[in-house]
Amino acid sequence: MKIGLAADHGGYALKEQLSEYIQGLGYEVYDYGARTYDAKDDYPDLVIPLAQGVARKEVVKGIAVCGSGVGAAIAANKIKDVRASVIMDTYSARQGVEHDAMNVMCLGGRIIGIEVAQELVKAYLEAEYSGAERHNRRLGKVQDLEDKW
Ligand code: RB5
Image 1 (cartoon, protein in one colour):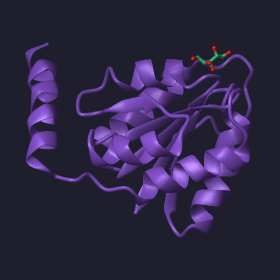
Image 2 (cartoon, rainbow, N blue to C red):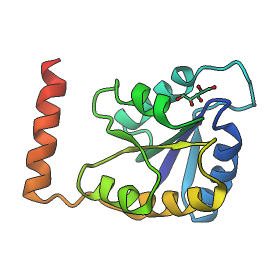
Image 3 (cartoon, rainbow, N blue to C red):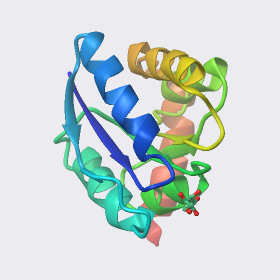
Image 4 (cartoon, rainbow, N blue to C red):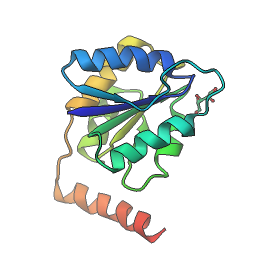
């Protein structure tokens, strides 16, 4: 399974650590950048290519890291078929996929440390969408709105 990563300067250090961790779990990683630390980079320039990669199914799931995770989630959710959220607990990391088909998890590189981030990533990557009728129905309503706009 190929996992996409992206981060601005606020998330760069955590992304680098997570990349090694994710590969250690046996996943393939595609890094959408930043490839080097740049204190002046802007999260949309890194997160949008990741979100587009998820939407095009280049990668199965994405992980975006900025300082808080908030800007990354806002940017990623502008791309059709992307469902992104800031995640800080393992329950949401898992349930966000199982119930809501979250496909981009956003983390705050200035908020959480590597140990917590690893647990969040593991819960997120191991989770699968339930496909339950009630979840499909709710997702369909979100997709209808996306199509309309
Ligand atoms: C960058 O300084 C910071 O604003 C950005 O990484 C992020 O936290 C935005 O949500």
